[in-house]
Every structure is written in C-alpha cells, then in structure tokens.
Image (cartoon, rainbow, N blue to C red; front, top):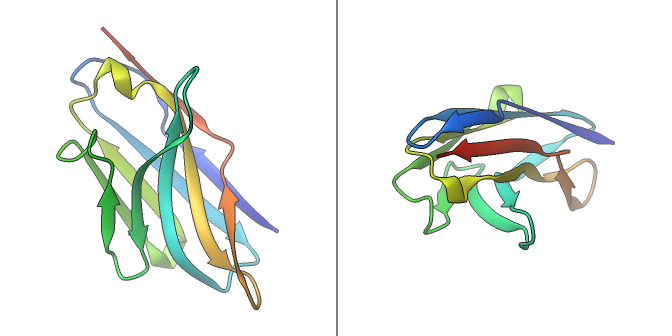
Length: 119
C-alpha cells in the first residue's frame, strides 16, 4: 500500500504563485515517474507536468514557462512550483506516481488539493 500526501494548495490572486508538494510513503521499491494532473469542474483530468527518475520533465503547453516540476528522490517527494497563475489554472491538482512495490509497476494517486486563482 502506498500513500501520497499532498499539500500547498489554496487561494491566490491572478499573477501569484503557489508551490505544491507530494510525498509518497509505504511499500515503494522504485519510482519511475512522478507528476501532477489537474481537473477543473466539468472537464476531464489532464496532465500538467511529469518528471522521470532521470529528471526528464514534460509539461502541458498551457503551463510551459510558468510551472516547474522537481523531485527529491531521497524523500520520495515531488514539487510543482506555479508562477504567473491564471484563473484557468483553477482546479483540483492530483499527485501521480508510477512505482514498483515488488515485481511490477503500478499507478498511485493522491487525494487532490484545490488550487483557486481569483481575478
């Protein structure tokens, strides 16, 4: 069993910044990918950013140049630094993990943290 604990969401004004954190704990042998997805009301969940074990990153076009993903492998923690926030960034943000607990890799999701950008 793996637990993902997210923190850092909240209410921010347009142009502001937030940093999300997500720490994974439990039966983890290896982590390949960590990342963040988001889901706005009435919309499908979409990928925001991912980072591999080799620190290779991938961003949605809508956040490139504004968001930065990073990870601390020693702490099994992934961060999302969000700058120049826009109202369209308002969503529930979910932490994502692709990991191995024993012999096979599987996905895990956090419970979600709300980010609200007010104009």
